[in-house]
Amino acid sequence: MSWFIFAVVTILGWGFADLFYKKSSENSDRYSHLKISVWVGIVMMATSAVLLLFSKNSYSPDKWLVNLLKYSPASLGYIASMIIGYAGLRYLEVSIISPVQNASGAFSAIAIIVYFIIIGKSGEILNEISVLDIFGTVIIVLGVVLLAVAENKETAKELLSDGKKSRMGALALIFPLLYCLFDTLGTAADGIILDENSGIGLSEIEVLILYGFTFFAAGVVSYIVLAFKERKFYNPFSPAEIKTKGAAALCEEFGQVFYVYAMAKNPVLAAPMIASYCIVSVILSKIILKEKLTPIKNKCICLVILGIVFLGISEGLSAR
Image (cartoon, rainbow, N blue to C red; front, side, top):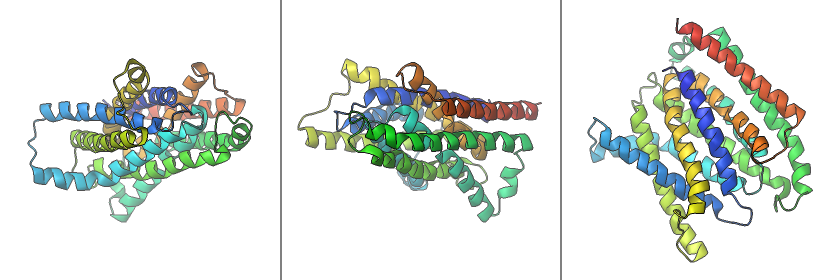
């Protein structure tokens, strides 16, 4: 299966995850981001355990420690970005936070290219990219960035005029901006680690297992912090929590599996394309959460879809 199909499935998985994250984030619940982290840690740990059981490779403690050190830049970047993103959803609409966050796709693609230029292996990865790939990627990045800019201009006025949405006002934009920073670091690190030209040598299965274990550790820390803050033990398995936070975690991990394989096959093109999952988030927020979709957002969505079509055509031609 091609990187393009993996990327499309990731877009759908993470788009639905954003929807459930928002439904899980009550403005009145100061610790909703920690509760979401607990659930994501549970689902990722379960996936890692299954992958470990069915893996044909044997793992010694020494190898695990070495691999964990190799993958720590990516995992720490992701964990930080995701928890920051969960916190931001208490104050911002999905249609606002998702486009701003996912400008990271463009930055991470640039970071990956720069890395391979520095180590002298840019030829191997750039030879796989066609003119149509470049054109489609530029259109996707342009659409996502324009959507983020449009949201930035509208957000301050909307948030300050509605105290129920945010007690922080326009300062709430710090959440998606910080997410963008950490996600750029995590995605770039993933692209470098998973690409066969980097020489780091971690497989897709190893990355999924390592990320699952590290996020489970973050979930455990979140659970402990919750117990101290709320002076009671959080029950993640209540029906209400399963319907929202459990569903969000499942969609997140579903997308994560396909994301890893997309990045392993073509990190430079996959990163900005996957970042366009914010388009799915924006559309779902309009349909289900009844958030506003302005004319400029519609144009940006069409632009991103057009870029994805170009990448799909290019992938189809290269497969002949």
